[in-house]
Length: 311
Image 1 (cartoon, one colour):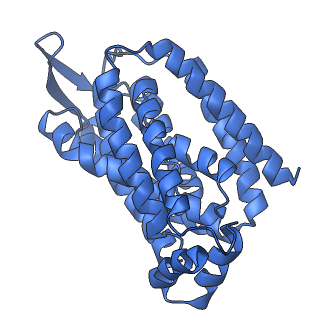
Image 2 (cartoon, rainbow, N blue to C red):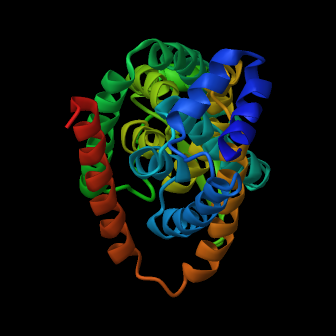
């Protein structure tokens, strides 16, 4: 009965018997399993995930897809669809406040969003077209790469940009914000703008293909390559997800891969966990949490690799 209720939501998502058959085949639940069991477990799991994501300073999407696909009996397409909705919900919640405080820059975000969102659509179609084991294999490699990137990256609060390049000036990629920590007005501009924009082609494809969101890649490119201050890079990256992930999410919605009984508990759990994580942030030791998350990502990436190889 639980499988039929779950699959009925998939049917409502795209109006076809194909989604119902896929949901029933890949849920892995027995006929007598209560319909509310998996959403409840997912809600609790994502609550914990939301706490860890805030303490580690990473987006929930980058943890959600590898862990849920590795430890839950859901098909990868459904996990990627829900992962995009999770990242999108967090971005939409944070976007207005970031823009109001000038921590997110529209001038910086819009050219990047045009490239990344277009490529995210391509990535979403590519991910849907490829065999699941190939996507799982690529996901494992990507997650392990993200873990290594988190281990090696050293973000800079205020990168030194001696002179803005011509493209950055033409696109108006500059601005200022009041830093509440120091009370000073921080002015910024970008350089190496063209290489940075080209990097977002790859980032967009990966975001759409794996449903990860892209904060893990946006911030290093905006901060280390293009020279935006760290707070502007983080804020603009969060705002970018509301555009990039929306583009890819429409593809998954159209294919019937966003199931309410997966997406809703995931979003609620992660957002509730984020509120708790913010309160715990002052007392936690971020270095320990960071390394713990890196270890979890390496484990999840290895598990995805093994699943992709059929081991």
